[in-house]
Amino acid sequence: MKQRGDGQWSGHHDITYAAVARLYEQMAGPDGTIRGLRLEEYAEALDRAQAHQDRPLGAGVIENYNGSGKSMPYAGPGPTAHSAYVNPNAQREHFMADPYRKGLDNLETNTEYIYDQLAQASGPDEFRHLGAAAHALQDSYSGAHAWRADSVYDGDPTAPVVSLHVFTPMHAMGIDDGKNTHADEFDTPPATSGSVRAATEATYRMLRSYELNRDLAPDAADRARRNDLAPMLRPSPSGVTVNWYPSREWTLERNRRLALEHGVLQPGPEAAEIARLTGILAPNSTAGTAPVNPPDRRPGGVSRGITSEGVGRDG
Image 1 (cartoon, helix red, strand yellow):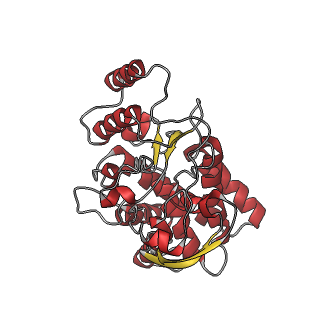
Image 2 (cartoon, rainbow, N blue to C red):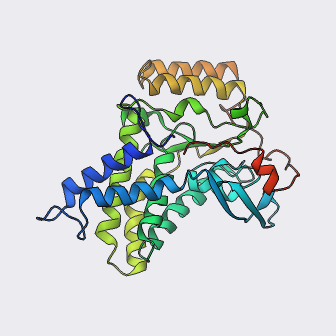
Image 3 (cartoon, rainbow, N blue to C red):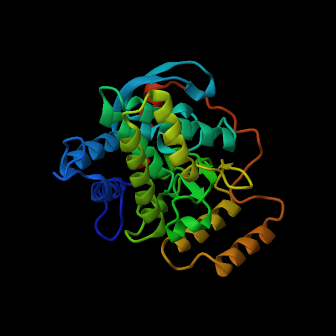
């Protein structure tokens, strides 16, 4: 998801400000502040922190380089531009799939990342961690990062997670590596779409839970936040898959969801019929999935290798 919309479509910035505005409507004191912070101060601090997750440049250590378990330093494009195969551990920051893990394992890793960031927000870098949690949660409603049940297109923040995508940046340079399932078409969702409304509501609920529980003992605060956020981070009844490859079935499902996102289709019998026909076209395949074993790991250096793939996923 891109950072800023243009009035016709929304990005992280717009969702963040809308969620904070609702938070202040519901929780601001008589002086119009929360913890002494005016709405503008809170929204600006949170927005700056979540936008940091999409930083174009960075330096640090990849903790699980190429899925090998080895650590490697990097300098150049920020983690948002790193291939999931090169930097699998960074994918949780954007609610995407580590290609070396199964679906439910990835969902657990992604949700634990959000809970961990909320727990760390009680320290001196409060908004840095709160913004990281908000960014990841918002990305979970982007069709470029995850697919939820169709009710998300009606604005349902509790729509279960159905599948997670894998990001590789080469497609942005016109190179099809056959591995990227981050569909850029979802990066600019219509401003009034259900997924935007769901992401805004989810961000508000997360912020409200954080503010209500931030002064509790750490264990009690964590339990309360998990109870509040669990309905928004649950798997579908059939589990969670990883969309490793942009297969024909994945493409059909992507197109169906884009039609739902843009209001060409409405969730219901017609959309369900399209899904059924997709299943007939590939009776032995779930849309966009692949065998349990992930693709072979790719060799190569880190610092220069990532530089050659320096294209961001915009969220």
